Image (cartoon, rainbow, N blue to C red; front, side, top):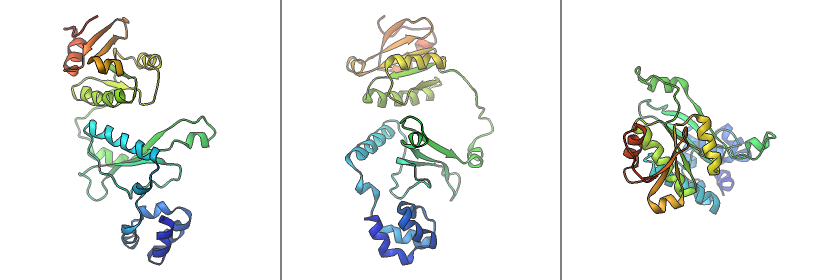
Length: 249
């Protein structure tokens, strides 16, 4: 439908977009020419043509953003300039930069590694405007390389959504936290936590969610205990400080 629509407005498009209309029609959405932008206002929107799998993927992503308190604006006109992107494309913007407000731009490219001769591995990447980023960093913000205090090992989609929210809450409370963002077995996740040098791991799956408790594992000693999910952040802070035991061994 987009190609058909572009044929009806082709005479109003710039030279580049007339070429793109045949070779890469989605790129016409990205044109900054006012005439092209006006022509695309009534163009078919990609959100109306998602397959069931892609629609479910998008909904899961939006659910995770909402659950983690990440503000977003769904922009059906946002496209990336390279053809290997799949599904999600995104920008991170700042209100402190004026008209040129994009700091980060990227997306998924699940087929790129295989196209280059590697294994079929889903991937995501982005580019950062270094000058824009530097202008947003306060002078007293000093980066430091530190090992994580907590590694959250999630088993299942529901646990992963909750785990990503915990990651943000832990970091907001001064606790360095990491997790795996790709599907891995519990053994592989604990191996990853050990390789990162995490002090402890929090294990959460469907069983733990049903019981309202997670498993806290001391990565150095190998000891485990259950702790309640209620007030989890405070419980973890207390255990890490060596002052408490908020569950059963």
